[in-house]
Image (tube, rainbow, N blue to C red):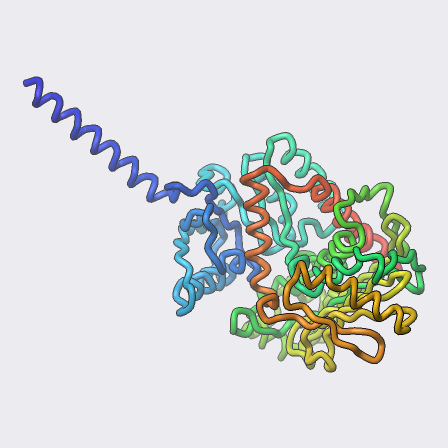
Length: 460
């Protein structure tokens, strides 16, 4: 009898162990400390976070959404990553749909990191409530599209601090190699000198972005949701794409420095203007036969939409004059987004151009104020600091100075940068080592964009 009892006990323990393992398999918790929850993924950036796999992230991802076309497009992109020939992913999407999707996410709490990339109308509110419920948050830009959102965002960061949670936004442009090198060279005083202060009419630093409604993502023409063209849901251009540009001003010009929005940022002026989209173009991008009712307010005639997606911000950061510009077109000669960047130093200017002469690929230039032979020797000698850190990078002489040539192994597309941002987030989450300047500078960034919109909206 004693042996039978022991055998029965052993069988019971094994059964309980199997049940436990099955339960873990179902919830995706085996050996993976990070479990993603994707909330209402209306923007393609949500899928790009999952274009690669991560060691600490479980393969099961819990998706909560109202259902509809946005969700299906998202799931289709994930499926394409899972079934591609080269280095396929193996995500498993567990989907809940319904009008109570947000409340269901909070109640079930199946993951510990919420990924937010979609309609921005409620994004800041979702961020705050997710943090209050104990989730970490990785949010696509913009995290705030109005001044009232900015106030909510301040509260969200306070909640994150109190609960020891991580709130972080997806700043992919910091990982573009030309931008990295521009920042690195600006830190070599023998080449760059120091950043000039500039003026309202001649900014010390200028970043601009030319964006396209019609473009390719992951090899396919991007289908945009109709709400993307409603600035009350997407946000105006001055608070959307300029988020990246304002971030680059702070990151490149004031590396590792804390920026206090109440003391260091001063608005000079903000401007906004519309891009016009005709009915045929709208149909091509959205695949919709008619314009939704909520967009009728933007019609300037029966068939043309006026979308306030262009903006310019002139402002100072720590007394340095900066200018950021975003412009949207249906498409352009480059058939994609392009970037321009200028940092003016006391010895040389550092520029990134991406025009026709560059075959619409970003190229970094060094253009000295005095291009004499002695300065050329100084530049070429001190550029060795760059080639030591970034092997394969070379200088090429131009009429105005030099261009910087990159080896193939350092060139990545925009989509690859999402994995780099996510990896950074995961490191900060694991090691609790996010730099002290990140949170105040995120707040400074959204203070700048929302204050610029407020200023521009008052300008006739």
